Image (tube, rainbow, N blue to C red; front, side, top):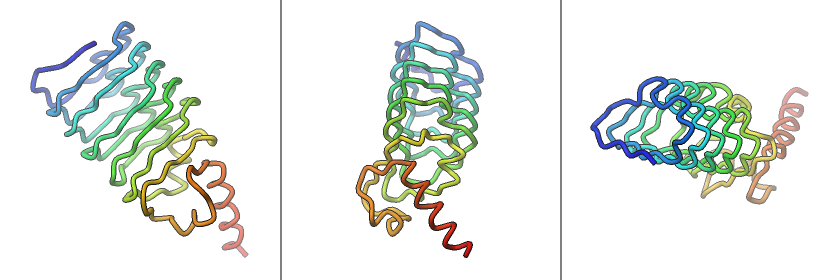
Length: 178
């Protein structure tokens, strides 16, 4: 376990890259940025407490953290870059912040165990975002309260499976094309 007590504003690029024995990390709330590959290939990393003030998670920051099971993105987060959580093969749950975050491509690529994506009621869920993030098609989307696309989901029950969303979007696109 590692607990950082220094008043850092960033975890620099590759700072903990390939720390195979690291199982848990507590990052201070003063950290605003987690750099490129900062925790990449920390194969035993199972628990991460992201700081309340975090604004940016850079490319591959947690890629290939094969033991990471859940990630909760803080409300301060503004951007998650390409492949940030790619190949986290044990990741089962991802909890999004209450606002829409800017994101890169393939954020969840290779996260084949991802079962649940928790989407707060204030979040806007768009098809292109899910496609870009490479969320597995059998992932359940748990919706809390009203959501921007609530009319789209009216005929469905929680949890929603991404493959169901894709089917509905395809039907609507076909109808709009006629």
